[in-house]
Amino acid sequence: MMRPRAFLPHPWLSLFLLIVWQLIMNDLGAGTLIMGAVTAWLIPLMTNPFWPNPPTLHKPLVLFRFTCTVLLDIVTANIEVAKLILGPSRVLRPAFVEYPLELTNDFAISVLASTVSLTPGTVSSDISDDRKTLLIHGLDVADAQELIDNIKQRYENPLKEVFECSTT
Amino acid sequence: MNDTTWIEWLVAALILIGSVFALIGSIGLLKLPDFFMRLHGPTKATTLGVGALVIGSLIHFSTKGDGLSMHELLITIFLFITAPTSANLMAQAAMHLQLKRVKQTKGEPWQQ
Image (cartoon, rainbow over all chains, first blue to last red; front, side, top):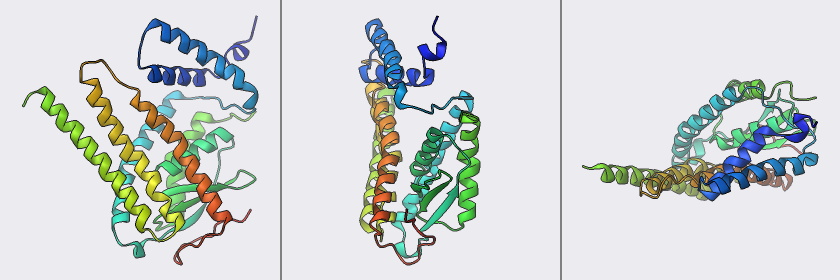
């Protein structure tokens, strides 16, 4: 008898792959569904050795709420950046901000970095070798501490809840 | 006004919004003064610009009668995965080459 972990190492990745497969095929027939299920089962199984420290998803609902916050932020922040771009460039206050990371899991950090890049006005540029600081470039930063607090409260805390105690 | 024209207006509005944001992103790419600031233009245009275009396309093809059409969502998913990665790589390359940045930039890029 195989342990469920060995049989299905990344259930959420499998679900994601199945959804992507269905979107590619754009068809809900039984044939595509079976093919998709087999793919979604085999790919995580074969790529498992390349993923030494897999994250575990603790609270899918928090992740869902987090996604909604990010999507809303993208819309509002996009409008603000559009204004900044169309306005005079001289008044902009670009800055490099060092963001102290609390997340420890690699995958969680990359999700946070992607979120920071996707929300307009900030681009994550680099991560320190010890994985404790993220370098962020902001297009117009009035107060670096405020930016850090904002990211911490809106993005990192929910991510910490979702992926917490995932380093084993 | 019947149903189809209402949907056409919605689709037209979404396409227009998407194009406007893509245009603003490109303007940013053209006029912002240094590389790090120019990086902000295209990463933003992809999120809201392409997002609005994709939703427009989704509504258009789903209401044409050929059933639900969702595979446009894939474009968004792949963009959301690749756009931050490429922006990050370009920023790292720029820091490595020590590209010029405008004087009022606060903080320092790293040398690792």
